[in-house]
View 1 (cartoon, rainbow, N blue to C red):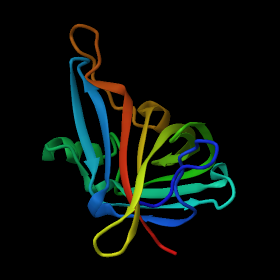
View 2: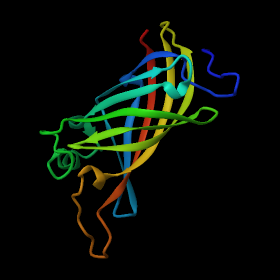
View 3: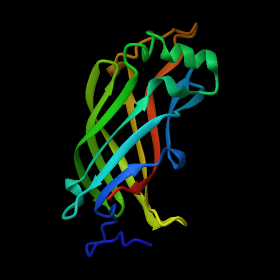
Length: 189
């Protein structure tokens, strides 16, 4: 296994450039439906890169994108609605993008990653928690690293404002969206 722990007890992504392997990664989200159920979905097409700094992991960077047309919630009618101008407007804004602006070590294997998230024509800074899961060599000789990323955004901050009020006064679609990324990345250099 690739050495991940530093002398200070910090667990980190080994230095270098790592490309996200979409076959072994997952970019997903959760949102409340009627405040009583959770709808889960994912983007089936995405890409990303981690650039782990040699000296100090807080000098590392990450960026990536997801193809809006690849959204999949398990319901084709809902997916079409999400691609429509009511939500993502995939025809005019086919991609969601993220680029980190700073990385802060929290403790052990956990980091806080701040960055610019762009959905539709809106870019806002978000903070996500990233946990280094481990690193190893696969049976084909590729070095891999795993990182779990979690966070939440308010969808209305990004222009995803479509809503329907319920008879009881509640909302059909929750405004908070939980982000769940499980990344397996392969060393590129």
